[in-house]
Image (cartoon, rainbow, N blue to C red; front, side):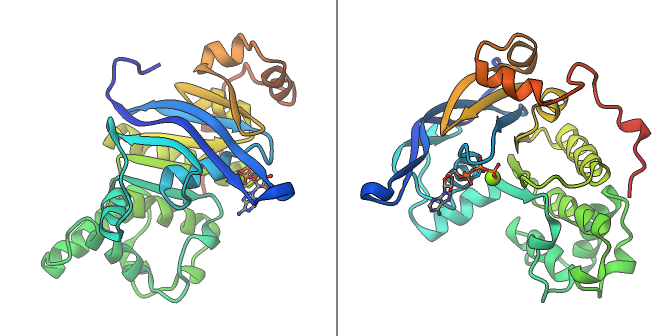
Length: 273
Ligand SMILES: Nc1ncnc2c1ncn2[C@@H]1O[C@H](COP(=O)(O)OP(=O)(O)OP(=O)(O)O)[C@@H](O)[C@H]1O
Ligand SMILES: [Mg+2]
């Protein structure tokens, strides 16, 4: 666990209640967490346990009903539009369904130029902007020259996923939240995303938060694991301690759903798209 590192994002008593009266549902129930700079964290839980709701609160897309979120040790303040924009320079998300990630009416260079603008590069000379876009595409093995006038829907699924990582390469957020949909994406696409995310983490030192229902993935990628059951964190700690020596029956159940948890994934056998 990266306990010697600086705190990046923390929460105390973070809660989200949806609805009122008999319809009331506590999706996230007084969770505490401390995520450090450069740490890879997985939040693992069954469908409906509150993972995406928490992710949206971390991203500032959903307000919390109770509790506080701290960014770099300070109480997070994103009440004004300007402060929210500032905050989003530090935290970004990728959703593993790339088709939902883009505005399909924008050409790819517009998508990438938007990232440069968000990083304050609006007034850079055009040649420098192209250089940055070429570098970002090169990072994920895409050729900028071949993409420049295309629309996202004209790309293959694999290319689109890589474009998603190229955006993050340009944005260089301090924190990246990767929320996985419940429906499994194929192992090959997932390995591609993982591989590039790890490479990006190594280069930028960003904090990575994986949201998944797959404890096998969590074991493979993370320093720290938080187990979420019905809106609560029931167990957390280093990936080894939580997964090799689980205390909670719920954690044991999640583990028993994964046939080969002790064998690390071998990405070298996967053919990347
Ligand atoms: N906008 C909303 N209004 C009312 N209830 C909601 C809303 N969003 C989520 N919920 C409820 O909150 C609970 C947690 O949902 P959430 O999407 O956070 O789960 P999850 O852990 O991400 O699940 P999955 O693994 O299926 O993505 C669920 O019972 C869900 O129905
Ligand atoms: Mg979800």
